[in-house]
Structures are given as structure tokens and as C-alpha cells.
Length: 175
Image 1 (cartoon, rainbow, N blue to C red):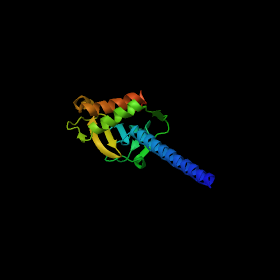
Image 2: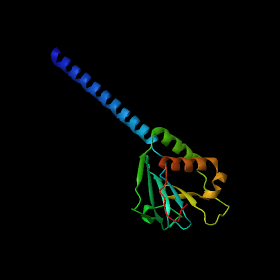
Image 3: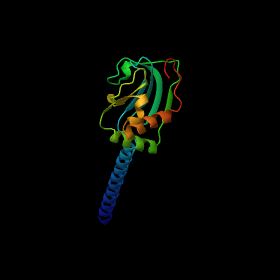
Image 4: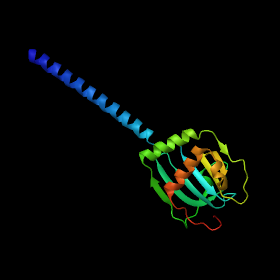
């Protein structure tokens, strides 16, 4: 009988240690998942640099997975951003860049600081325009010529996105 009780006690101990081990692994997985989410952009960002009307545009998008992409195309609606409103020009090569943790941390910080919408109040005729969208909603609009008067964090965000892409494709009719 003593061996029978001893076997049950050992089985109970083994069962408890297995349960504790599984719980620790689940907590570790949850912690890793939380860390991965913190390393992703808080919002999908789209920067459009276009001529007035959107018929020719540089389109830079940062997905929530941390991939920065650049295309050339045209947009039929500049009030909000949706890929359904974009016609990509296949004559120009798409560029994709995976951002690192430091870049994403900077982006998330700049998104937070650019929570207030911005609209350039000084009209400049025949000048390139910037549109910035967070999750498809227009957050900022301004003329390229007036970029020095933009809020500093907005300038930093636009400059960061443009610098990461590097050289924009040359498009006829766009300076």
C-alpha cells in the first residue's frame, strides 16, 4: 500500500510541475507578443507628395507591420486615403524597406506628437503638396514651399519618411 500511495504522490507532483511549467511558458509567450506589438507602428501612415489634384503622386506608406513602401501613382480622392483610390503606375519600381526597432520607436513618438491635425493656411499656387494620413484619415496638409513653417514634429516625420525612401523617382511634370 505504501508504494501505491507513493506512486500517487509522485504522479501528483509531476502533474503540478507540468502545470506550473506550462503556465510559465504561456506568460512568456504573452510577454513576447506584447513586446512585438510595442515594436510595431501605432498607426498606418501614408505620406502623399503630389501636384495639386493628385493626378501624379509619390505615395509612401508605412504599414502596421513596420514595412515602408513607396509607389508612384495617382489618387482620385485626397480627403481620405484608401488603396481603392490609388492607381499605381507600374512604370516605376516599388520600393519596400523594413524599419528597425529604433525607427519604429521614433515613428510612434512622432505619431503621438502629431495627434493634432494641421492645415497649411498660406496658399502657394503651382506648388507640390503634402498630405499625411493616419489610418486613412487626413491628419495634415501643406505646401512644399511652406515646410519650414510646419510644426517641428510634422517636419521631422515627413523628413524621416522621405529620407528612409531615399531618392524619389523622377516624374514628368513634378519638380
